[in-house]
Image (cartoon, rainbow, N blue to C red; front, side, top):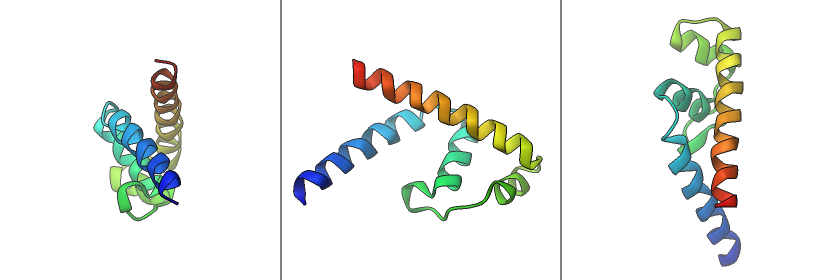
Length: 79
């Protein structure tokens, strides 16, 4: 179990480091959408309402943020 916790902690450290490089809006969307850092998971509609934008705008922003985050994390793995 300790090995598994270490891997999870290491992954969370990388995620935390990389998510901080995104815009504040992207960070907010991903944190709320996926319930990161012990936050409550929210629907795209709930997040859209909070940001006073359409569901589609948040959906598009989420997709862009996920793609960027994946690229950042992949770059870390290959470095």
